[in-house]
Length: 242
Image 1: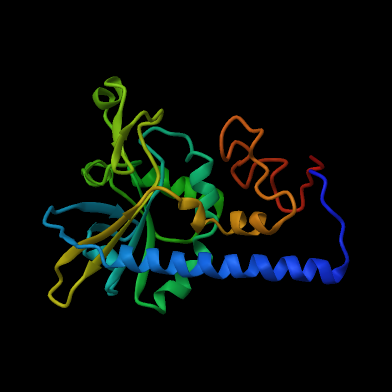
Image 2: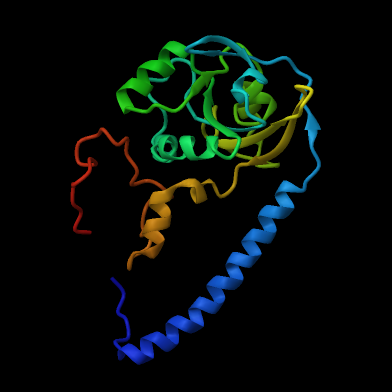
């Protein structure tokens, strides 16, 4: 832990008030940025995507579950994978608690992966999740929204991800897509969100309040410490003295 200046309570309060002013400005800027994202133009979705879910086949319009707004988390889990990559389950651990509250605001939240439904259901049972999770196996949804890549695309050294061409080591990438369904049943793509998904991870927000923060600077890569929550040594109550 880096050394810190030790001050009186009054000196601390003065410093905290100065920082509070910057926090309030950050909140205002973030609210403005969120409003600008919501105000972006929409694209009508004409392609007939068909997904597999526990209840059977479903179109993209069906996934709204009688609501007007749909948030889709693109979970990195491909055909033949034994499990999802650790970072996606880290985020997914925060979904169940949000689903019921979002439903009260006319929003459906679910996950989609390229893996066949039987793989998804098995991993979902293992992790103890309840949120809706559908399979895009056999359709182009993940590729059309730039979160899965062919071997040919990867062989060229760069893929289109997060609105730019870049190297990416996996055949799948994480992301968020948001859709709206109007009163006529037509579906529109509202926004995509790839960068900054850690804002959706409640555990990171808690770590940002802790004295050591996220403490990831010395790691090989961001989230290198993350494990599936059922791994030994990473269950609730385990300790780290680092």
